[in-house]
Image (cartoon, rainbow, N blue to C red; front, top):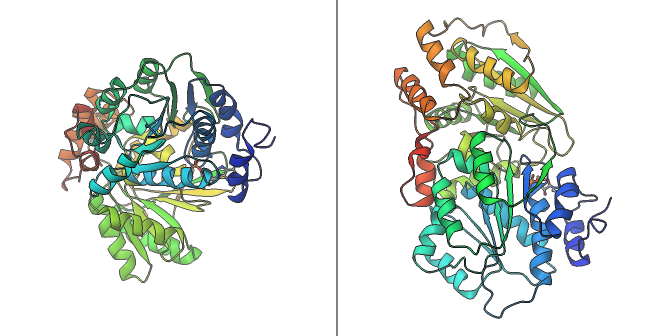
Length: 439
Ligand code: AMP
């Protein structure tokens, strides 16, 4: 199967070939033909599957083949949960649209809105945006949704987690009823299904991997480690194995900063990426990591979401996520494009329950190893706390929020709240759902 076989024009195929793609990925094979024929799509696809080209290529083709109106009203909108993902999708669109007469731009919060307004005023065909900034720009009459033909929701599950549902619905309310809708999500909770049923019309389902499964070529390793020795163990792993490109996940922004400082002190080049970092610092950290000027990128879940880091060999979960689906998202960053990857988790006693919930979701037991000198000596949390966390696990409803925040409060250190990122990104208040996740 070639890109031309999928019905893509020579101008699009040429740009894709210049990127070095020789054949379509499975999601591209499945998604491109129905999108070209104007169907709505509900696609289950993680970052790393080639999903961005999967929706961008047919939409670019559609836009370039339909008649241009001189002032270029906005005709396609891609909504993403984070600034980084928006910037990445936009970079892809620019590359793929090299040989077609299509104008695109990107808008997100955390940076000056004036240049964004100026670009929008000149007219663009396709816009990539985070929901909050987009609504601000709409309020300021810098953008109109009246001529939208195609709406794409990328990483819809994370947009829900970040509390963007109200913003999304508001944006849609300004659009014409008749349009094509494409929704991409890594997981399919009931909330996602509900959102999809309100937006999509007779969607074609596109699945590339079994629901909630992890990439096939990832090996999972669990090290049972004493909580206080996790940093030393991480340094040992990196140094003993001579690893040069590792993405490390921490649960909190504070934890990310602390670990980064310790790695640097130990002579390992590292940078942190999280919601408290300026957009400039985040972009720089990601660029340095991608071009190998730094070895380690330490990230919180939301900041790392959707980052395109090709062929990442190792992901370390410095702490296990307290929402099991996040484990799937995290390790989606390794073993991509057919390469094998290693997902390493450092699990202290109080995280054992998180591990069992992840195993339940994966339907797979994760083998645990204990390394001499780093054995867990800390004790599991008291029974009551454990049962609280059990109840709070895996259920994305309000009762989980309450128990989850109780659990956080019960810990000695306050947890930094990554959901502030959503607020910063949007510059407007969030719905109650924004308070769902605590990182
Ligand atoms: P995505 O899942 O869209 O974030 O894409 C992940 C990575 O795969 C990006 O670096 C893309 O440039 C790359 N990619 C997308 N489609 C293909 C393809 N057909 N062949 C090889 N690489 C691809």
